[in-house]
Image (tube, rainbow, N blue to C red):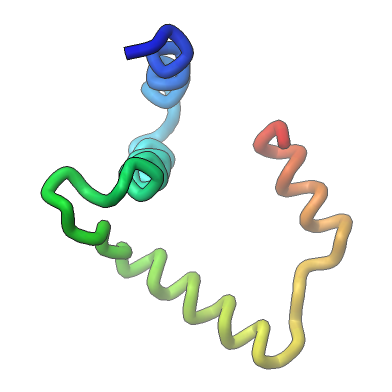
Length: 77
């Protein structure tokens, strides 16, 4: 394991469990799927969030630029 990955994992350990799970899902997806080769299933909350997003998009409701920048800033992006 590289030092950078070790540093990232240590930072993730400090996050709440739900955030750790989100990051783990992203890592698995980037690495080619789950440990058993199957797709990583969405949680009920993730599925509901996608449904809400699709419904809002169908109505033409999108985040304003200021809202997007605020979210990016929250996560240091």
